[in-house]
Length: 550
Image 1 (spheres, one colour):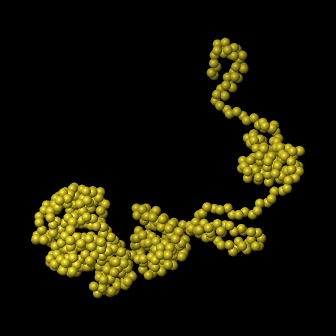
Image 2 (cartoon, one colour):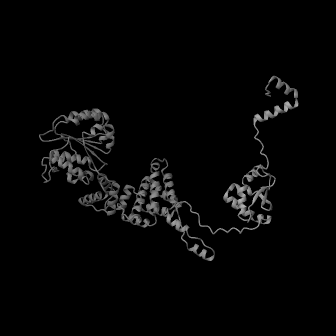
Image 3 (tube, one colour):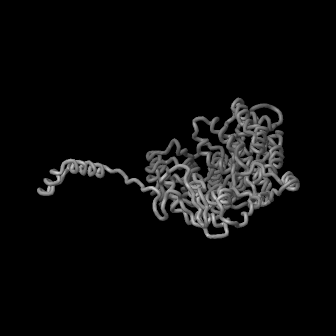
């Protein structure tokens, strides 16, 4: 029994799916006799690179070319076409796998074989080298001359999934080749092709099952047909979505539903049971995280007014359900965190712990709110009395708000200062706590100094204050702040005020600050004491011009 990927391999350029730009160019080159001597086919795996190379070889050597009515197309049914299409032995078409024939000796052998003419008049020799990026630098150097000046009617086709490696190891080769870039095959194209194959085989399959297979193919038609073959061999009867999930080990949809719920409701305690169920079922946690990213992207697209594609009906309903519960700014932040942690998730030695931490951070992440809403909510005055309480009870409450720059709530109107009055000791003592608060608002240091003072007297225009505990440093600080304190006291009296500090004269330190003790000072004091005890020592020092060291 032939595998579906081989059985339904295209036989003509027109059968190539999605790669119409390549098919049109190659068909035109064959029809016009302008086939290049070297081609580079680059693109993802399973998109038709080797197949296109075989069709090119079939078209160049077809016995009934153009019989279909389209110039440059092979018939696909003649003996030459059949041998090339099936990969049978052929003197004129040679396929090589560069992964196992990558050395310089292999390249030299290929070069020598290319010097011989084709097996018949009018035929071309075609060499198809798959996985060409595996060739060594020396092998490319051995092929460089023949690619630059090839024998007549010889065509080289190099197929690769990593053209950048060829550019790094053999940059001069690229200028000798015509390059065609093959595109990934879209989900709809793969789905349509799978349905055609199922119809041709007389098999039944659920639409959701075909969709899951096409999605798992990840842009490769060959992979899609191989997966379909695998699912068909799993059991008889119609292909169901559940059978596809069982064969491929896909994550059940209800796991993604639970994920979106715990993120939307910030249910952190549900994270560990969810990961436990995934691990117990043998699920690939990396695949689950990738699927979670796709689900969040679909929710984001739906929240922005788009229509997510590539989802089953169940997942589409799930996305619509949570599009209103998870605003787009929140989804963007969740996806940004996933993008930031994705490299760590791939390289982590403990994948389960890494996934749990990711889900916990998703569930704990704060929600964004519009700045205008914050300002409007904070701009509502709480009011006073029953009316204020009623307004407060009906005011909107911001829940799950993301950290924002705090705005000061409007405070109640400040208590107006008392009217100015005469300067008396009782009045100043009664106002002293308020004066200290005014000083603290103007200068925290001044407020702290006044906290340890009390009003001693108030006579005429002079207010005398004293420190409760004698402290030279505090006294000096208050002396420097006397003018500022006089202005604060003057706010409450009718005449100008002068401040004095008991125990200190105006403009002087209340207590002289002791000099800092140094080693030189201690030594000088000791020598002076010695000279005072012995007058003859002073006479000797002066007469002989000596220096007393110790």
